[in-house]
Image 1 (cartoon, rainbow, N blue to C red):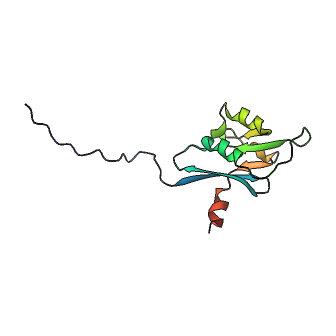
Image 2 (cartoon, one colour):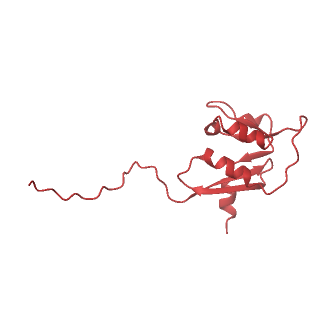
Length: 125
C-alpha cells in the first residue's frame, strides 16, 4: 500500500474578495437629510441593498405627481431589470448614470439619493 503524504490545509487565497466589516446603504432626500438605512456584510453588492434601503424609509414622502415627480439617483451598477419595477412600486423614477456620462441627476435634482455614507461615518459616536 503506497504511503500518503499528509497535506497542509489550504491557505486563504490572497485574491479572495471576501471582506470583513459592514456596508451601509443610506438613503437621503435632496438636501442630504437621511431618510432610510440598510446594513449588510461588506461583501454584498450595492444593488442587493437597494430594496432593504427603500423599505427602511421612516419618513412619509409626499405623493409623486406629474407636475412634481420623484426620482432616485443610481449608479451604473443598479441598471438591472428588476430595479425598475421596484422603483415603480415606490413611485420613483430611476436616474441611472451610464459609463462616461454626466450623472443624470445633475440636470434634474431628485427627491431621494442613495449614498452619503461619509455622513453616517462622521456622525457615528
